[in-house]
Image 1 (cartoon, rainbow, N blue to C red):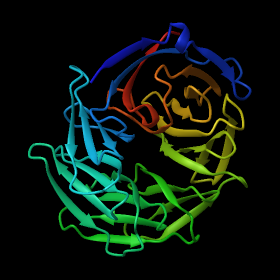
Image 2 (cartoon, rainbow, N blue to C red):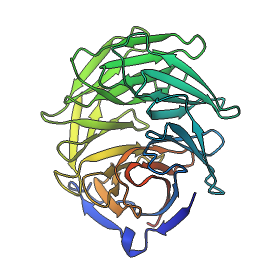
Image 3 (cartoon, one colour):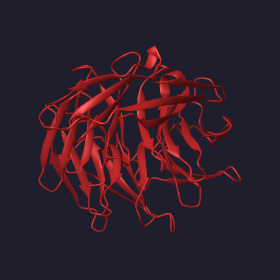
Length: 338
């Protein structure tokens, strides 16, 4: 419940500007300052895994080890946790248009829905027991819920109106579907963490197309920008990657901390900047990449981070992060300086 604030101007969050690649001729990168705010989980050792934005302006998180979903009022700092029925091991979560919170029961082979007004949880069991560990989920523009199943090697579709679940395995065996985003045309795109591939699934036919990345790449999380360019964090090789699905062209940019950076959680803000965290350094870092100028800024995360496994962008442009190893969740506010 405690809240701590740290301005990026202090020494612990000093701004570092590093060129990843040759800047575009005649252009300078826009520099920003950031302000970190964080809150403790109510339950010690909750291991907050993923964050989400609630339609009422709140920050939600999965308490993976506490078997809870948490809600933070970012105006008052009040934290409330909702217990789940059994050992669900909540992993990913997302809000629907009515304010219900949907989550993946990673340890229970299900997708769950929490009604925050009543605390009631509805469970949607996987139709195939091989889909044992649902991972990350997202709604498309029609209100259909799409999700990945990491160890079971599936991509799933859940219709909230009927509860019907359809599962599809990618062509590559043991590929480990991980993060998932939706393009502007409604196509879900996901990364295959145990491979050097990213997949896209046709929302009507459920046919999957795979796109190859450089050999040795291991995309951990993905984000998509306004031009439907897919950005990924290469956890194994220490790169930020860019994939154009139309041309199949890939560009890579070395992470500031080098080959051992282990970039993980990633998101794109409305200005087109790509943000991600390096989990292979202590404290973890927050990195901003400017696609126009190919330049970065880096901040140390004041709380240490403890591995930022996922981050999301709120409608107002704030970043929401879960600091899994230090049992905190946080908000990053961004202000342009140049």
